[in-house]
Length: 498
Ligand SMILES: [Zn+2]
Image (cartoon, rainbow, N blue to C red; front, side, top):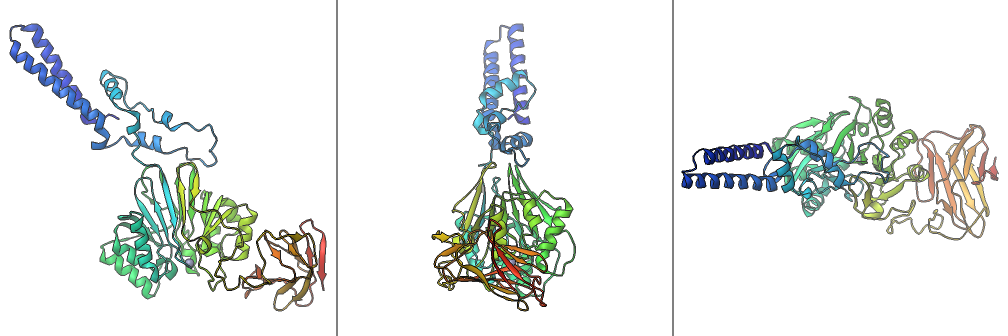
């Protein structure tokens, strides 16, 4: 990398050398003065050469060259083995060939090119039933997305300090709910802060007021977070909000600022609590939503992660930030089933604690192994429930004595019982409401123990539970009579109830 200053110094020394040589030829008598001149010219040349070696530390670096050398191809799916080795990419000539640049290039070792360490780290901090995500960018910048609940403030501040964070270049509050902004005020007060992003929506809670107070006390301004707004995330990283796309919503969750982060050929989508409505808008807006890692919307609630959205994102990995035994039944079985069906590897903060994903621009790795789909927390009070579907690889009979034991048409509850003496794996089995011809497919790893009961509920009041799967929040069963049928994974009728 050649800096303008170096070129000037080189040029000056060359002129000086030329002038000296000229004198030498013209007046061979004045030995002493010429020796001094030559010596001076030599020293200047050496200084210039010295700048060439350590130059990039002292002077601004050629941006285009660095971008080329640190950012692998932007297109998704370009992860073939044929990728150009980094060393080849770094061999970009900076100047038109001339005598000076040839000299400098010789003195510039190849390894001084990329200033970035080349890794992007995403910490999904375990803050229980809440969200808080730290992103450490290759440029050294930090992004904090959400700050957990009110009492998570010191936990988050300590975690960030432990990770060496001194400055939060970007603080994003996805939306005004306490489980997202609760500890943000503490974080803002504890670190040097660059920019604060927040969707344009007000909320009348003390938590929200505390956040505004912290922002005001630090003389910060709020940059509105909305679709299309980009963050200056440094070289090689693109960070853009893809939601919210509207200016007003009935549900605060849909105001969620959704950030898409792309580093090389890897990408992340942080959805906050965005629900179906916002997901639909993101799809219609035409954003490239594809991402290797999806922060699952709204703690895995069935109100988010619509099939169309999941298809557009097509994640390899999904992270669910959720609390143990939370009162909402998050993550909902439907969400887990959709992720499982799509072959997504799922990580959960309730089961695995803080999850850290690392990207080198080409691949994403995790600090934990993906969680088994329906494993429950060890301290889950329902874990001992013998009627709960279990996930352990127990020996299972293929059809066994599973049957529909009852359908409560009004209550929208279907009871399925395993009357046999062995556990039965009903993954991929189908429950059909014959009147409406609606079908529910059982998620993978759904196993009913011998003598166990599994309920499938629907309707607006449907709640997931340890042995209860939610079909949908819509009404399914016709109260005037609606036979239900159960088919196994091969489509063979197992049981019918009228
Ligand atoms: Zn939330």
